[in-house]
View 1 (tube, one colour):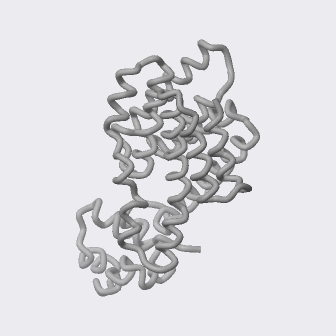
View 2 (spheres, one colour):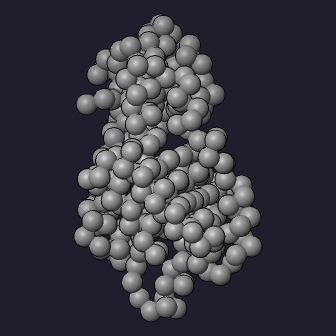
View 3 (cartoon, one colour):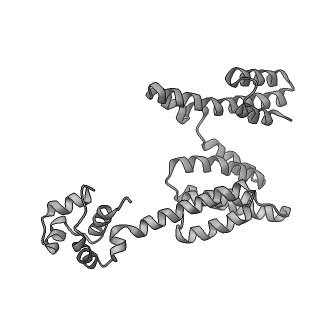
Length: 259
């Protein structure tokens, strides 16, 4: 078990604007010992825990970080349940699961993303689906206002375009889409210059899928707007060159190419 007592002591000490020397003086030990705990290089003697807990006005469990460990385990269980429900198409249950989870983890970006996705996946009448979509868009707006995780923000910036579009808010969809980075400024395109060896190889292999998807989507768009099916032939050749004829990833992209 990874006890977080050092991190907890450090956080509690800073919250109360105390020095390591002041904590050490209360316990009758050297400040170097407190410094060592906070660096994670050792733990306080078990006999000191009650005194430390009393000094910081917390329980021993809180001091040991057990509350945080329990929360982390519960959080993992919630996300595992969400994934399982999603596989089974239990989207209504997932909406309830995420609403309840957000009471414990308010404004958690990942949970908000999962609630948004579950709302849009729910079945119902046309009006019910529209209301779910409106709530999903509002949740995504909340993520963009307050979320700090760059990957979640990037995905939300993309997804919210489609939420606006489905709601008939074409102007908002276009405005949001214009804020997205172009194909040149993608993560994989930067990493390919800095990585080496197996990491570079892995990055480039993984980049082929979104690149093939992007090429296929744009070639299909050209085929439709120009009335020229030759673009679809080119798209198929790209997939064959990159993945071969029998490939699950290529087949999923081919489905997008169908009228």
